[in-house]
Length: 456
Image (cartoon, rainbow, N blue to C red; front, top):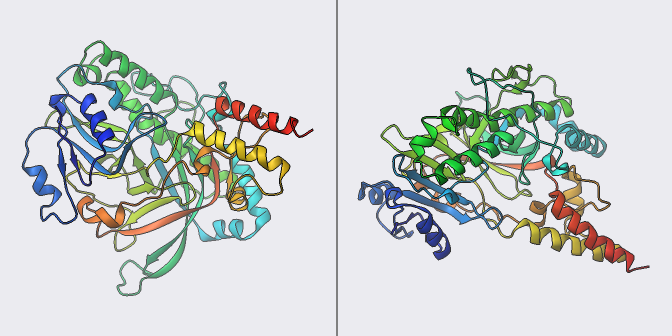
């Protein structure tokens, strides 16, 4: 029976799910660290020598996808019969960001007409698989002998949790990095993109699940062969950040920021340009352990393969960025949780229930004077989406409260190795977000339209 090591009390349901999915070789330790305990996480982990998994704050199992969130695992590479339920199909997804000059951002935010125009342009410029089944984004998993693409592909949103847009923040920093004692608040702006690897991630997941189902070990799946093989792992590890970098370039052009630093996508033959990112964090990362086995960052930030540190709150609150004392973004995170940090906030409900609850609100709003959404003016001013045209415009599920707020920094900053970092919160200003999935939107539209017909 696997044991579980958690920074806070692990829920019985999560403990049971991990215990049934992991093998004895992928040991998960059962130790609860309370706030009054004199031992540190390092002390507790040093008591053991076998492979393990660490349950980070805000850990849970998603009610939407069934994937584990904020759990760092160390898996055996040689033993067979690894449960495929451990892995999320959103391989190497994450968030990338570039800093935007004040003279570009502030005119858009302060003028309502310019804000609305910029929002419409960003929404129109980024393709989304939520528009319909005929839209596919992301590169193919298969490449040539040099790991280059063999076909053209389009960048865009590959899941309901994607977004891109302009975010504002108040950053405490000195006028110059060499000056001490002069820190003050500066307005800072970022273009931020949250997206995954699209077609490459989906293909990699299906091939890995199929290979593990035949009894192969992780080493056999990823160090040899072609299904998915070492090339598949290399290709999927870059697919999501390539997709995000191209989306950022599209969004920058949409807000008329043409001075964005870009670089050629060397893995493509089509001459695509990608944004040079300031921040690039990855989740659902599977990387080899030099001492044997594999590390898997399930729904949490893998600092070893990321550039900077960033965590996600709910869409209304935005993102949390960590900087050093000089406002630098290069954070060398070291902690006993395999150098991982929580990324996603707690999920409060699934998308289906949120969409149907929203549809009910829209149906009632037809006969009333109040807007369907309780914060409609604020949401419509800052968020836009490209949905399948079905006669009803329903806000995406994340805007109806399917995610909670970030709540781990204050309580667990020391244990996670971020106590000395400064915190900067990015707030949404002009953001394109993935729309309601077509199937769910179709059911919701029928529900609303039946209510409209009954009024006449």
